[in-house]
Image 1 (spheres, helix red, strand yellow):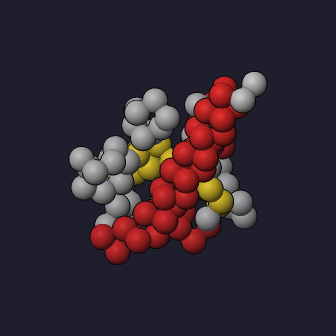
Image 2: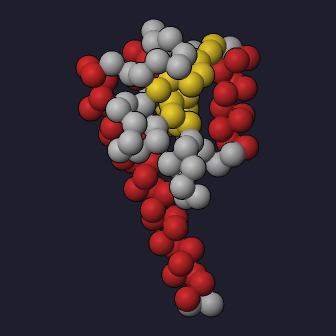
Image 3: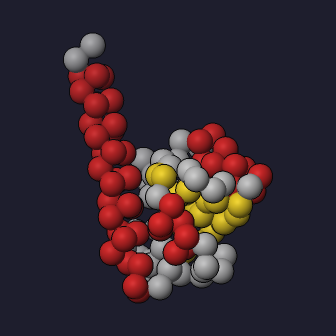
Length: 110
């Protein structure tokens, strides 16, 4: 979920080869993250462009992208990848929470 409580996709990309995979995770009410988009070349760059436009964090992780690229769009990730993907999602939430805390501090200390 993003800071507005909405579902968001978290793209991962491989810097060596233009590949990207976008995941959606709605939190505890969803069993596992779902692959919502994937692509190579121009398609990968479009996934990244859209993510940046919407302020969705991006992580460079060619190994994980390679593993996720084999999953069909709109399918949940397999249990074997839960731990790896959970670490990525956890990192995104920590960054997002840190940014929210910083904004709150800036508002209270003008």
